[in-house]
Amino acid sequence: MSAKTKTKEQVLEDIQNGKYQELYLIYNRKSTDDTDNQKNSIKYQKAENTRFAFREGIPIAPITLEGFATDGIISERHSGFKEDAELVFGEDNTVQYSIDRPKFYQLVMFLNRRYFKGVIFLCWDRASRNKGDDTVIRKLMKAGVDVRFAFAKYDKTSAGELHMDIDGMFAEHHSRVTREKVSITIKNSRARGLCTNKAPVGYLNQGTMEHKPIDPIRGPIIQKLFEMASTGDWSLADLARYAIEQGFTMPPVRRRRTKEEILSEEEDDIRVQIEPICRVPTFTSIHKILTNRFYTGKTFDENKNWIISNSHEPLVSDELFDLVQERLGKKNKSVHYAELLDSPLRRMVYCSVCGRTYTPYPKKGIMYYGARCSGSCPNSLKNFNFNFIDGKIGELINRLSFTAEELEEIDARASTDIALLDAKRMDKLEASERRKKKIREDLAYLNANRLTLLKTGAYTAEKLVIEENSLNLELSSLCEAEQASDISMQETVRDVVKLSELLKDVSIYYSNAKPEEKDKIIRVIFSELSLSENTFNYKCRNGFKALASRFVPSSDPTGNRTRIAGLRSRCPDR
Image 1: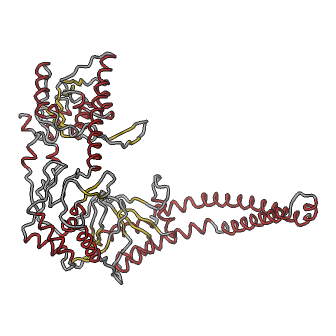
Image 2 (image 1 turned 180 degrees about the vertical axis):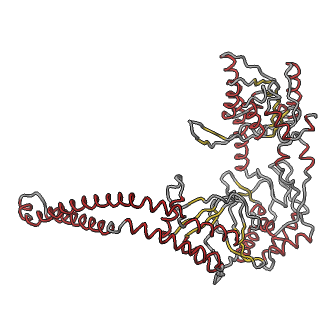
Image 3 (image 1 turned 90 degrees about the vertical axis):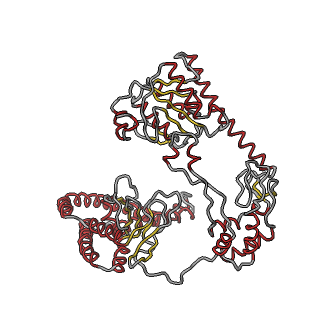
């Protein structure tokens, strides 16, 4: 069976079994920092690296692994300068950071595990242009991995180390200079009133910042849309339908590449396969057009302020644009309900990641809950039905009451633990009584010797009053503390056990209750519920925290939120 006909699992098994331990891989990287350099071409790197391997007699591993390598050659389109600045500090003095290049990450992982003998790069800047990845490569080299470069040879001497340091430094410096030149060019161009970004629909992008001509087909239609919107008689949906009737389409764009297409080996075939598509406008795209001041002949300066553009002509006047904004503002009406529908668990369940509320909505006689999470929220549980959350809450109520084993343990420990706690309480009461006795003696002394203390100058009238007030305040605090501690520990435990028994009865009633009745029970016991794809969190009300606290993990210092196991699988009917 040839390498090309093997499945991905079979190829990985061969790699892990050490079949290619004496063979090499070739790594090529197309930089996004300097696209005009011929050395940046994947085709050029393949030719030079293959020629170098043949000349030096270096055997290349004949593996083809989808998303990684073809015939032992890895090709990646990614910047080697950008790096993740976030650090993760783990146990045993370890520090971790993320490698942005997916194929490079898999390569160094294989090399670190000695699945391959080494790798061939064209030169140092094709391997890396940042110090983080430099460190990874150098550590692999020190660990015995044979890293070769087609355009350079580093001796195992101090001079060779210096040569490597210089190449790494210049590779990173080249990217810094390129980035700096681009930033300065953009800043200076914006200061001159040039449009440095892609012009919106209605203008033609011809690859130059100096000239953004008006689209002769789409431009007049956009002018007409502004005029129609200024009357206030046309909705955005009506304007979108009118534009479609006039043959208006958005500029052709290619769809976003899939992960497989990003990891593909060929250099330019993806752009040929993904044909650009002209889509019809929606009311959202019409709204973006009508609110973009670019159409008044303005562009951004270096401080993101609108200035007169020297790259394009206005399609509409400032007066017309401002009138359209006024018309659109009058149409922005938020919906406020005079009376919310009495749905169970309203404003009770939240996304445990971003904190957005799950809002109830009925559909085909079933109550569903949906959350409009933020765009960066990783929670995939966007919708579920009432039965899903109902079952989880029922399990939770059952868990809050003590089991038979826990009650036996409480009974066994009650005689010893409560006795110890009562003994500690008595010791505190005795210490408090001694302190109260001392305070009363001090107050009696101050009252009996008030004139003497004032005449001798030991106290002024103000200090004497302050001292008396301080002693009286401390005395009242000690008395209040005694009253609070008079409650027996035995009675406290008895009350908690009684509450647990009541919850068992509530659990039976809850399983047979209607959704509205279940909502009332839930609100009595819990103050908040939160969900994500695989976790269910809750906050108990004060009276029930004593029961919930026994589930609190050691990593939760608040004792208010508990993660319940058993929600790892998705509910199929949500």
